[in-house]
Length: 99
Image 1 (tube, rainbow, N blue to C red):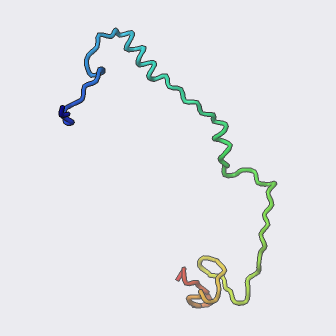
Image 2 (tube, one colour):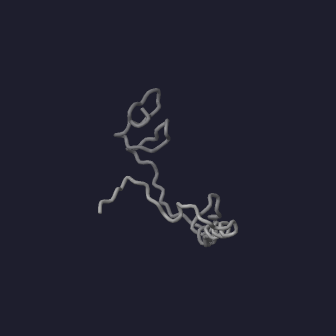
Image 3 (spheres, rainbow, N blue to C red):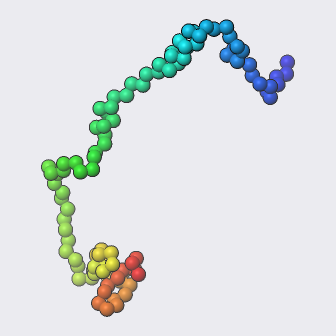
């Protein structure tokens, strides 16, 4: 038997039923009573808020002073190597990125 796939499909719910108003309300309440169980305590622990107390933390960063072959860009204030020097106009050293 050939099947017409373009024909609208009919379900039992498509046909009008003889249900009472109370039965329809009960079905609606059952469909809406899905309970989502989310523990908000678990999700909140994974986030760190800005401004958190970091007074107990120690940073271990070794600061190296500016070397003889480096300059500080007067535009972006980053320490760059002399090979990145773009211009030295009026005593202002500017890197290639800022030029």
